[in-house]
Image 1 (spheres, rainbow, N blue to C red):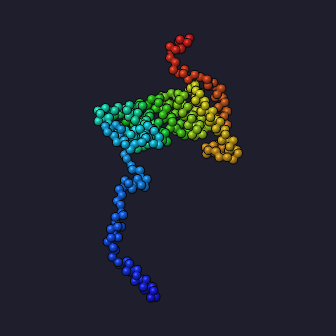
Image 2 (tube, rainbow, N blue to C red; image 1 turned 135 degrees about the vertical axis):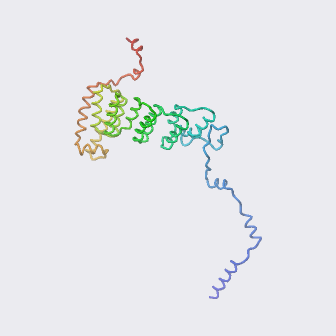
Image 3 (cartoon, rainbow, N blue to C red; image 1 turned 90 degrees about the horizontal axis):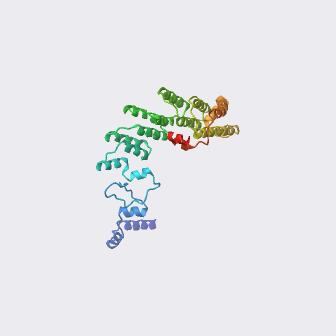
Length: 313
């Protein structure tokens, strides 16, 4: 016990003892003040810099090495201050943008809701109204984001601005028809407006039913419509239907082997016992004999004029 008491007294003396001024000065002399930049550099922290606007008179580009990870139109636009910065510099230089400028801008901005809303909000600020080409491109970009209802709502913008849809508008809307019901509604509306189908629109509808919906009955109805409307199929339409025939046939064989197949194929086998598929196969062979497609057709024939045909004769 005496030894323990002596040890405790010794520890208390060390804790309460006054430090030597010389040792204390030596301790503080070893301490170095390090700046935040040096500390970040030591830790490998890369400082963040705002993307410079290359349209400025003296842009700060000392920290720019290159466009990474990829050199895209969106990245290049960011280097010009984005869409708002680009239009700001146009106004400073007294260059007034027109709707064609915004149409081109719509094609290079990021395909997101935020970027699209920002661009649309600039229309009234710049005193511009959308035209038919702008609206058609808007439908296509919204369809690529799988926002089909939003794409169809573009028609409301066209109505508010007294814009009459053209054949390209219906071609863009056809891309949004991913179900047999939406295809049926589209065809009814198109017919009520007095429109006439062309092979491009019909090929788009057939492609959606073939590759997205996987509905043999819907594809058969569209092939019958092709005959009624006297639309001559091109190589692209034939390849689309043939690819569907070969793909669906593989799915049926895979299901017989107990392998995985898409759910629409499972429903066709379970609910219809492949009745719709068998009807499609039967009509597909008949359809090929009826339309008699020319798969060796020269694609440059569409550019021939009446004078070219007269010279040949």
